[in-house]
Length: 167
Image 1 (tube, rainbow, N blue to C red):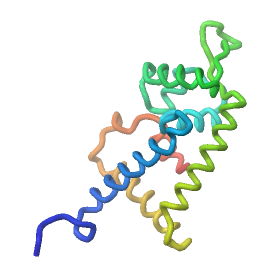
Image 2 (cartoon, one colour; image 1 turned 90 degrees about the vertical axis):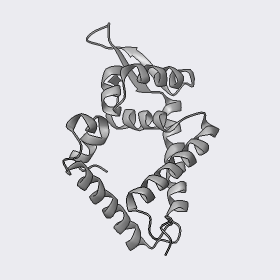
Image 3 (cartoon, helix red, strand yellow; image 1 turned 180 degrees about the vertical axis):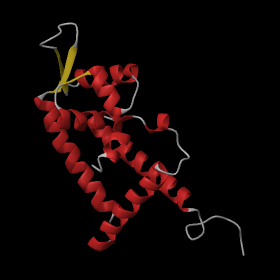
C-alpha cells in the first residue's frame, strides 16, 4: 500500500485547506471582471449590514489593520463604490457609506456568490447541502473551542459573527 496522499487518505484538514485555496483563487479570478478582490467585497457587505461607519470601526469589524483598510477604501472610492462624509458630531471623523453604485455592486456580488455556490455544490442534494453546512459550522466551533488558539488569533468579524451564530 502506498503512503502517497490522495483524496481517499488525505487528512480532512488538508482537503479543507486545498478546497479553500481553490475557492480563493476562483473568487479572485471571477472578481477580476469587477476590478475587485474578496476583501473589498467583504467591506461592501459590512457596510450594507451596519451602514455608515468610521474607518476605524470598519477595520475592526473586518479584522484588518487600519492602514490596510485605508488602501482598500481609497480604491473603492476611486471606483465610486463608497463615499466619505464628515461625522455629524465630530467633524474630525470621517464616516464611510455605500454609494448607489456600491449598493448595485452588492447585487452583482450576491448573484456571483449564488452562481458559484450552485456550481460548487453541483451533485449535492438539499439534505447533503444542509449537512455540509452543519459539518463546516461544527468544525469551526471545534477549532475555536479547542484551546489551541489564543483570543488574539480570533480577531475581527469572524469571531463576532461566530459568537452570535450569524454564519
